[in-house]
Image (spheres, rainbow, N blue to C red):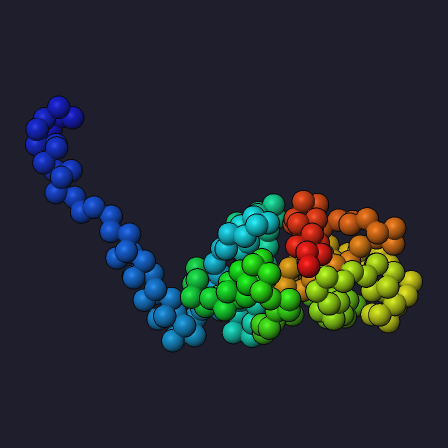
Amino acid sequence: MTASDPRTGRLFTALPVQDDPAMARLHERLVERARQEGVLDVAYRTLDTPVGTLLLAATAQGLVKVAYAVQDHDAVLRQLAGSVSPRILSAPARLDDTSRQIDEYFAGRRTRFELPLDWRLSTGFRREVLRHLCDIGYGRTESYAQVASAAGSPRAVRAVGTACATNPLPLVVPCHRVVRSDGSAGGYAGGADAKHTLLALEATP
């Protein structure tokens, strides 16, 4: 049978067309079955925002990871497989509340996130720093030195910078509110443009 043979056309016509809604329903059933059997440890989804597409991942304990596109979502998922669990599935519905609150934040209707957080990807002094960041109010900033003092180690300015740079939950745990002593923005996991966008959003009356 050749490509020019009319039987070839009939053969391919007989093949089923991919049914995207049906595939989506099958995937949802897979996710639910995995949840019921206790083999879904990490659920994830992506969300389009004014600072690019975010990867959101959650465990049974809470939100465990927020990652910017510049951090390479595929690499982040591989890291989660190694550090949390290889039992990871795309399960957008599990992150509906997180997505809704982030959308509200960018719409100017939310100034504080109310989400359960899984802190397992930060430890020791870094975790102390990140917990303090949640107390920096919307529209406010603190310097790295101020955060170091608040976290109990006034001389650990560089360690504060490292904690912010490795924050597994940027945006939700607002490391973008930490700036240099001279008032300049400083670095950010999502890039300089993303940090400026977030600070400008919060500065808008």
